[in-house]
Amino acid sequence: MMTSAAIEVAAVLLATTLAAAAVAPWLATIFPIGSDSDANSEPGTDGSYNRLLRAIESPLLRTAGVWPVREMTAAEYTIAILLFHGAGFGLLLFLLRCQPLLPWNPDRLPAVPWLIALNTAASFVTNTNWQSYSGETTLSPLSQALGLTVQNFLSAASGLCVLAVLVRGLVRRGSPTVGSFWHDLVRVTVGLLLPLAILLGLLLASQGVVQSFDTGVDVALVEGTSSAGGEAPSTRRIVLGPVASQIAIKQLGTNGGGYFNANGSHPFENPTPLTNLLEIVAMLMIPMASCLAFGRWVGDRRQGYALLAAMAVLFLPFVVLIVRFETSPNPWLAAAVPSIDQATSSEHDGGSLEGKEVRFGPASSALFAVATTATSCGGVNAMHDSFSPLGGLVTMWMIQLGEVVFGGVGTGLAGLVAYTLVAVFVAGLLVGRSPEYLGKKIEASEMKMGMIVLLVPPIVTLVGTAAACVLPAEAAAAPNPGPHGFSELLYAFSSAGNNNGSAFGGLSATSAFWTLALAAAMLASRFLTMLPLVAIGGLLAAKRTVAESPGTLPTHTPLFVLLVAGAVILVGALSFVPALALGPIAEALQPSMTAGEETR
Image (cartoon, rainbow, N blue to C red; front, side, top):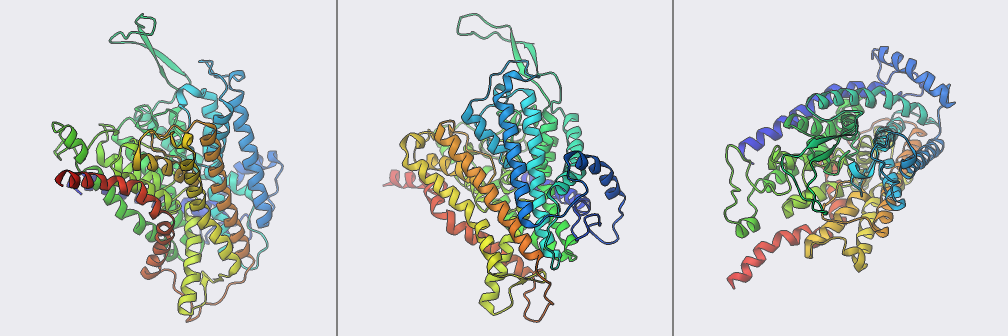
């Protein structure tokens, strides 16, 4: 990695680490983890912020009819999650279908077609934010703000609620309850996500990200263009709207759905290198802070450091690789157009700029890409379809690891804890040690739920990709032939099946098959991983703590960090390496194969 790119990457990672360290104590105070729902999450913590939150949340919970707060069993918590998300799905579908009848639609945009509306509702409710439409030409500002932005907050908050349940399971002893979903939801939304989103939104707006109640402006064209009728229009309409408020939470909540079709490459969403830095930091900040807060919650900060280290082991090597791949010259482009300069210079990171924004360059684009796929955000500032074959492989691999390398807000760390439980269980069987994690015995029931969490995303991804491949009309949605076309199909279901939402842009996924299949993949992957995690929390909360013994496996050592990281890589490799060999790996080998054939 060249010096300028290395400095750029190091600066972003340092800023992210500092931001996560600042947010971690804040996050640790948000959720009441002990059995007393009004208790602070950590002994000795100043309760002034909690008192402020109670003053805000009390009237909201009273209005909703769930005051005073009553603790729920795991089954009741699960039902509350399903009811809440079902209501959110219905409301968003109503807004999209009734768009022409609702206010704040100055461009008189029609109702979103049924299939696209169903896909979009499933996408935003599940925190995936897959977009089969162009935001500025399909959705009114009301649909964007009241529909999509609200779901960005609530889907992220529900992920953190699941993490809270899992932590309570590890901390509580013989408890039949795991908290109150309504209390957790209001508390994390009002106490954490909303303040952070306001702060980030102001910072983004200060740098030129649009935030306006005006929906567009007509500007005079510098040069006239001919229309179909032969007349040259003198003006062009530029779409505006409440963009900064949506971008702030789409990054913080690892949602990823942009206001504009071009997402983070649009200058109204991400105009400067500083906004690019802020958006990368926002993606990684809460997932990193969750690891640090985890150590505070369980009373042993080394446990949080160990989980964060496992994520770093899985993340940092691929940061180096993708930056290297994207700043290296493209041999095909060099052979086709020798005059194009892909060399490293003081003004250029090196490599191809095709599909990338000049204001960011290849290194920043690569760093954004690996961050957005590792965190399940899915927002982009470059077209992943234009990356080198091995650069595209890195983005796909980050998604296919199950979105536990930082992963989604709340769900990423919860998923890694599921891998940790499996690693503890397997290690205990191998060496004859008691399978325990943080004083709780890990038994068959937890393993069954854990395996569902681990296996649902690969099954959804591979079954969906196989179905698309055997249906000629649906396989034709990927216009590129050969390995790259297969990569587009595989990436789409990897993204939907792991709740990421990004795409290889060449795919046309608007047919009935694609909209419904991807919606089903998003719903299955979200709820068939979240709900088993809630069940694990309930199973663990009901158990008594077992005293540590000489046979207990230490779960804060470097060896255990490598064990957890190895479990993640093993599941990902066994599930996806054969498919990757048919896609990006085969595509990467094509230049050398062609060269060999020419030599012969």
